[in-house]
Length: 263
Image (cartoon, rainbow, N blue to C red):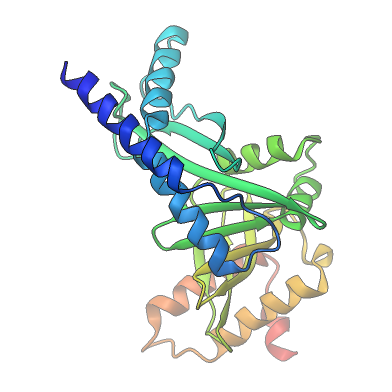
């Protein structure tokens, strides 16, 4: 009885929000407009019965297929909002629990996207900001991982399963922007943070096995900027930061990055 009342209340709240909000994401919006709409739609999901229904469905599927309790087992669900925005919902085992035992033991990832003349643009809402991946990023990912995944949505899903938890390392801010390199399971993401909008735009991908000779000029510039940054750090006063950048550079350039210091 209590569960019925909760679902009824959630449905009532959800319907009220849907009535008040029906704005579709389009590529002509600026960053602030897009962020505003993303946060509104996220709120709708949080107060709707959609997530509740999907987590129960996910639980039933694991049980039916006899998935091991310690398996992450990510699954995707494609949803279209009342505003006709397309969302990709990923549900998996909660990382902080060793075993999946109930519908409450889940992790949730919300992705949405639109298309422009340059291709797809994918957004993920995190507490620290908006994570953005453009068409070019996924094109590079497909090429450098030698993947035969033609459908771009399938590629987006595959990437997020393989690289669930990027570790970002930022360079000093310049004119409101900060370049970054993120360590992934399969390689590295390169891009920049737009400080005022709190957007993290992932622009290109490097595979772990990619030699430096295959880097584009832009990618080499980012690597050179990182090397320049470490050259200005004090090994004693900035020991933790120096070690972080050193490890990152060694992974990026196993054959040695010293040549960039001479440039």
